Image (cartoon, rainbow over all chains, first blue to last red; front, side):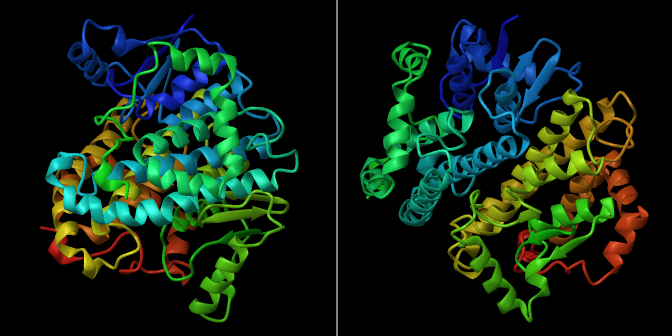
Length: 242
Length: 242
């Protein structure tokens, strides 16, 4: 039975981390809200789904993934689940939780990306908080991005199995998430990222290697891959990328 | 062998979610940075530990937990690990990941608590962003707190095993984390919380029940429990609690 992914239809957002895992696994899945007639319909269907009163484990927010009777919310929990089922995480329990720890830290970075353009909250438009976004983004761009990517570089340097993957000697969902966060940051902050990736050559190489995996390459070229846009988490506002 | 918890010495912060699990489990642990001569020493020791070059799985940030050769960072990953070892999570895999999903959502709430008083970033003092904090906190206080606590209430209503615990019919680390986040919000936003808890009676009851568990009660009365203060995540600024 195909998985059902519930997420906003018009953006990559947090759902994209799940899509990449499903695509790399070659898993069958339905991107439910994108199957609806139009984006507004899809968003409405998603909200109706989240509000259903017969759900025993109601998710707080999208994305969530249905696997038959199982419904899981929270991107990192979904990846923990998919990692076990599709060999996208090591079996060894210490490495399995290390993979999850990396994922949770990437999720923190994603949260900071969002807050950089929405420091006063998601209830206001960017246009209503541009000055505050500029203040928050300066530190995020110059200190936090290099700190997070430097940490990922350090993980690759210290991996006893070599620097091709974050954990062990095989691809995990953490590598897919590294790809996505680098891809998104390259879209949002191309100038800053040119400087940062020059200091993180192993992160840059892993980003390239993931993009060249056959299933990921096919996915990125398909219309299943939504293009980055200014409704999503990774937004390109030139005034924030100095 | 005792666990070693590495966290900032002067605040409850995210480390407190780990401390509560260790205390409820009756586990032996050393709160490493608090063992140092003074708080400055402790903070220095923590930073030196995090920078050690011989750590194969370097944490991005505190807290982290050492269990012999295993070192785990990220609060939610630490709780996943402790939950399995100390019967603080169900064994059933679906309920185990549901517990984790709840924890991750509580962690999101904790992140929003922090950003309410630091919307422009952790690199500036609160005094440098008071106006922005007031703007961000208004929505957080009036919309987000009720939304998160309403979601926890809904989980208790829908739990097929009754409304005494979030998951199944036994205490899990998610219940301990509910206690801590309610306790922190009561400290930071007593006026708002009076209104919110009136709408979430099951959450209020679970908060009280956890506080009365013998080991938690003993812990809260001990000097191991750091008092809330304005260096931590939960801060009481009366101007933000209207």
